[in-house]
Image 1: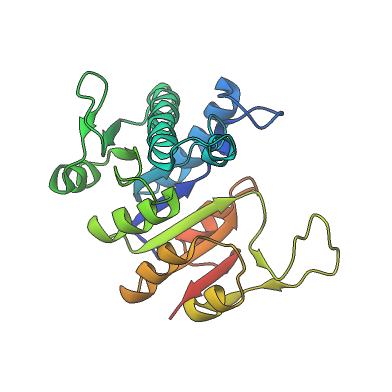
Image 2: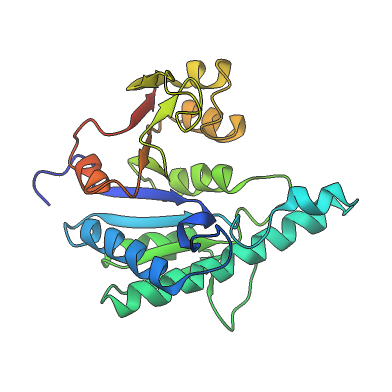
Length: 238
């Protein structure tokens, strides 16, 4: 594990990381590509915990637009994250990485209930742990779940994996003059309303001095370089 800046990480993935070209559903090929990227970091000796969203399967905002109860919409999203967790677990296991899924909402037939001590023990034994069902509570995003779980398992960094190579002051896919930030403070990220993560997640990281790295997961070697301490993407810190 020499040469590593971070030895235990919380990797926050959007559900879209598992989606096919249309941005929806679960694409087995995409899951395999994602698993290989995680495996490369895991093989360095990094302890990896993962929180994954559900945007590829369900967006609660669509339900709310039709008058759906917020709690119902959020619970549906939590269940969708478990589907994603199982798909990613399968891909990782087939790649030779021992993986456990734990869920904040108990469903013992398919996953372990989330127990902090057990999750940490899995990590210490070299297993990847995927933490599904968010926090188990409505009104909290998977960004907040990622921040919370990172704190609970004593992760050294929260890595927010996206399709953009960091945080910009605009949308670089639309505005060619958008400026990229190499570093930001937590307060700047909140005050500038950069939509990196929701404010609850960033504030939780700020209160507990947990650095956040926002990077492009699909950029070759980006995740590897980040855990080795290279300047990759955008670092958000105190």
